[in-house]
Length: 412
Image 1 (cartoon, rainbow, N blue to C red):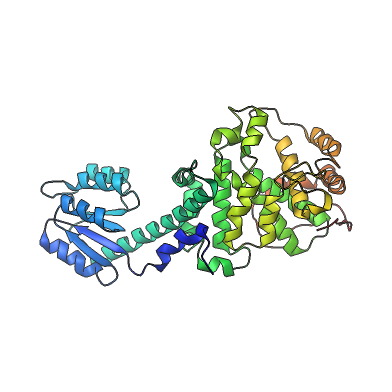
Image 2: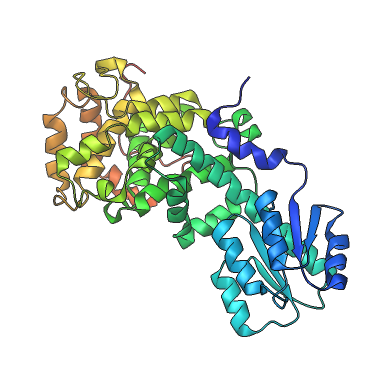
């Protein structure tokens, strides 16, 4: 079976046998010592000066460079800046005998992984190189996935932009460091049942990136997931069905990863133009999720969450019970949360105002049976516990809703 193009780049790093390391030092003794220390685990090349190092970087695929600062000709700090400019994904470790606070700060500013002093310790050097290459592999997996997104979305959206946004959040950085220690998206993902924790946390970070670009969207995905699970419980859905609804609800806007921030916030475009600009996000969301090994109903639910009960929705114009039940659920909960939250282009509606709107659209935009059930949940106070929504998975059986389960589920 051919590998899906969305995953091809993510597999490259894991299938490469040995990382490529370049040691740059004008002194033969330290250069050869480092080569002997590292050559057992990596393919190691050496360079006596910065110019030779750049020549090798331009003709070979180098994963990591160790740089001495005090070299004749091109100094180490100049080489470091050149590497950063031309080869931003290459990791750098400074190993020098003439370091200072100023050079250490300069190295940090240019994103070096570590700053070691001579005489170096064998264990310290080996551990630093290993950690640096792990970071590069993790970043490569992420970039590979985002470049796959770029191929899905087209040339107008650079994967590095999304990566920069992920890395701009300290919380996302902390979670990514933990998640990406293992292949979040790799050959085993397709064999894992929904919810291998690595894949799930990866998707959580990606979905939350969308919200981080719009102050008014913060927490939207988790609230919609919480509301959707409440409605699923009221419909007596099975545990697995509720889990799929919850996951799809959390990821329902993941296709907006291709939308510019000003489009998401509505700060520039008129409302209708803004809506038109993100009209493809449900289709894009499905295309992003299908290759990740999640259960197919999750991706299909994301695709159809903007269908309308009267058939006037998108992307496929499905109507009535032809719309997946989970999509009909999310259509209601998504609209309720959107109406009751502030937006830059309109004020938040009260809970009662939102319920009136839902009822007015019952049979038009929304499944009338589900609207009735959800309105009962809201009025009962069950949705007031939305602040407790914090996980996509049932670590323990969720508390029962205040309504007795409703048997009339409608078509699945």
